[in-house]
Image (cartoon, rainbow, N blue to C red):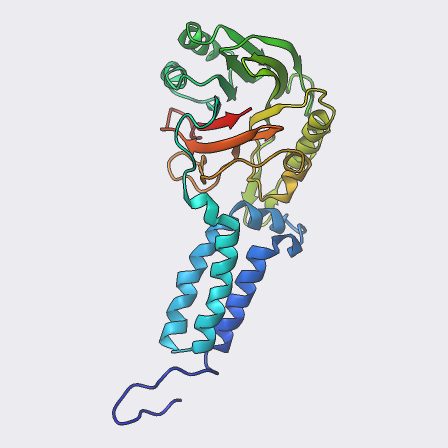
Length: 319
């Protein structure tokens, strides 16, 4: 224990707080090299990557004991995770460019198959005036509400199974993209591809809804089917002959999640903005994605809540 001098509180020590300093080093390592965490058992690595930005909350937690211990070592070590977090996510703190910076605007939304008011959701999406609107969990009973609300502004549409695409521009070469994992029967249709004839030229547009993941206290993250579906989607995009590609979808994972690497490695990440989209009541992760190839997402942002458990996500794209 440090001794008081002349009635003053102990000064700052250079050797105290080693345990806190060690935790700071571990936190910095997890932020910088999350891939070192193994994915088995329970896909712990993917679980960590899903919520990676939230590791930053550990910084103020570690600051408290560092200050209480008056540890110069611990406070200095705390700079490492701060620097790592800012390097990874600092650019996302700002929403990005002004509206209109992207010449092309898209909206991605999982509308929920138990949406209590699909007509209101459809009207809200139509009011965005986006060039493209991609939907997932589009059920047969809800489809007429979306068709009615968007008929005037979006004369072109394509649906396959439970995914759909509404467009201001003509759509051609529409086809199903089979992203069914093994063991899933016929009728599980969650992917489509279309060519959008935009004023800037033809663009291949993919809409996809990857399988859901589950998080349990004993099983951890169960993402096997999601990962398998991501690999199939990646193969389809890799084989796409058109140079410019836009992928809109509920990928049930963040871009830091290694399980989405078959897709994310082929695409350009979006611009600034966290744009957390799930769950709608308290968003903690963006699992609704807008990715591009040979185009740039200049801004991505969440839109107001609808009747879904996801928030819509809008993005400006420079083609």
